[in-house]
Image (cartoon, rainbow, N blue to C red; front, side, top):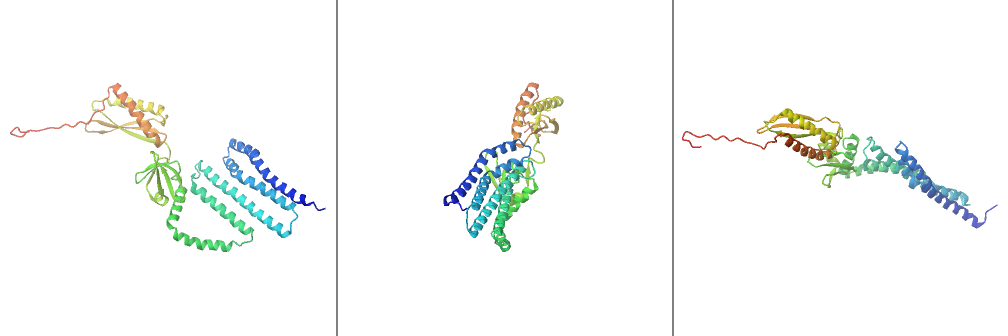
Length: 345
């Protein structure tokens, strides 16, 4: 028996609105529980999955409600097929949206474990690839042949490649930098031109380096990939620091060595950024013009800790040398003047 005119449209509308309401309810009540469980889990990608489906989840429930509503409506077969195809396209788009978010988030999360660099370049490229595949699937679903499109893209891509040589050079240089794993966000580097700082990001065109005075250096990827660059975070973030000292020729070198090592150990244990378990070394290496020169090898947790540790070491060592009577000499030059036979100097 056919439903009344009001019921014919009221029930499908209620189902459609109910799908949207159910999606909002699931996102507000159920998804936070999964988020808390994911936060406690050892697997790091479940957090990414929860974040990725947060938006598409509501859209998915809304589309499900619309699908059921279309089934309840007494529509002409052609109109019903058209609506179902439109809902299928929206469903594919929603899945593509979720996959693109998850892929980008997974790549960024994987970077924290050292597998991949956590930069926008890889995440953006992956997102574009997923969206492009989703669009091709949508076109195929609509009955549009994608073979001519792919052929046209190939020919057009060749023309674009010729027109955008510099841009593509930077893009592929950035990919090469990331694939090598020698330069990563968070690494402290020094360029051959003298600039030094922490890599903040590697995008499709350029690398951003923040210097210690809090200014930013922008380096095109193509130039960075061919430049001689020192990475202070590889192979290990810890690094040795050599401090050069001078003591008087009258000094007891055994006492100098013992006192210097005691102060160095004290600094490494107490100063911020020092490596407490490292055994410092003292090496006498030069008979200077007015002093004996020596080097002290310390160990710091990172390049940015060098200044703090050296600062504290020099302060404490100066005080200890004064207490022990160890002289740090001023530069001295001896000038000998000879007289000629007439006694004239």
